[in-house]
Length: 412
Ligand SMILES: *[C@@H]1O[C@H](CO)[C@@H](O)[C@H](O)[C@H]1NC(C)=O
Ligand SMILES: *[C@@H]1O[C@H](CO)[C@@H](O)[C@H](O)[C@H]1NC(C)=O
Ligand SMILES: *[C@@H]1O[C@H](CO)[C@@H](O)[C@H](O)[C@H]1NC(C)=O
Image (cartoon, rainbow, N blue to C red; front, side, top):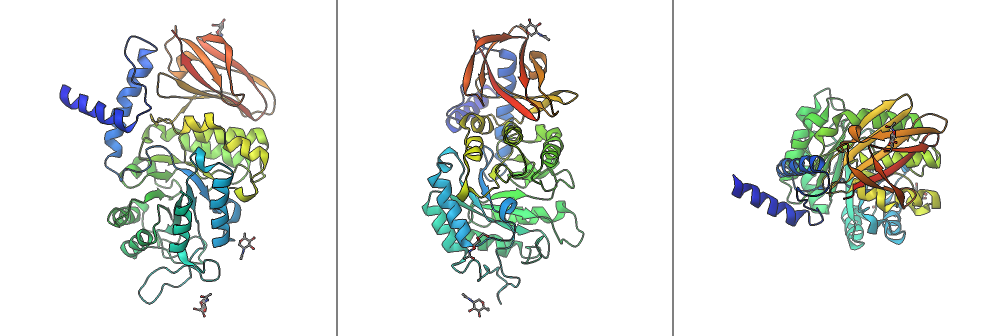
């Protein structure tokens, strides 16, 4: 037993080179030992899948901004923009084409065909282009007879063939939708594509999109790398917060290799204020949700850029421990979300859902720190380490429909 533990630890130390392995003498032993145990069990869990998605995927998807109005120019220019804005360097690597990219009819061999009016060069050429930029290309299909737009076929009955087509084109990510499925259960249809992808000869991130219908958190990790826990998001505060709430109870099912997905980001699409978008980005980050940008990043405005390129918030999302935060306290409109990070640290998000400024308190007891812990606080939106040290709680004023986000780090 001891030997096996040691080799697991060694393997993990190699895999997660930036994990700080704590000794029991310093910091907050309660938090650290729990996190360490979680990391080990999570490693075993993702090993059953395809090895992708050790941290939540980051990138862009066409749907939230463009819906069906896409073409190869938009996809290429978006890839260009991810690089020129510096977003690719921050981890945004997937360029994901959503619905409406194919002809309504398959070819005479039954293969999917890129729509020739909008993708005349074909998907393989697009994949080559995106790869040449150091990025990855994602595509979309549906576990039914037609996709949700009904402008192209679904993969039901063609799973093996389509998976092989995607692999041959150099696809790196598949979002798999749930429309027009003839009434069979997702637990019947999704395993077929999961199996087909695993036999397609190329590692392809598998994103299950069955809208949370049958609690996919309970079975998704065996099949794919992420699973939608909710219906589609819309670009409003109420829609966004309801997706956050619906996603939260499944926290314990997420981990390296398989993530809960409350849908793609709306930051930059214009339906929320800056502080509301900060709440959106912060909750998605601390919830280890995929960070898939959903605006037109060819025209990235300053406000959007400031939000989605916040390195410190991104680092919370990409922390190798991969533990999804939970809502640990909720009083009226004020909420505390918290979750452990590597190196004994804890990410804390104070959210004020009300219209007016309010004081919000995060108690150590709620966020999993031992009561006597003295902690240093880093404010992730102000980008500063607070002068005061904190014991027992951290208290902050939070504006209406705003948040404050901290990393607490125990000090000697
Ligand atoms: C491609 O799509 C974009 C966004 O919908 C549109 O503005 C542009 O005119 C289209 N280009 C072509 C060549 O169809
Ligand atoms: C698109 O498809 C139509 C019908 O199959 C064909 O006539 C046409 O030449 C194609 N256009 C291009 C640009 O390949
Ligand atoms: C929060 O912590 C401070 C300093 O440790 C303490 O004085 C204060 O009473 C605490 N507040 C609550 C509500 O526990």
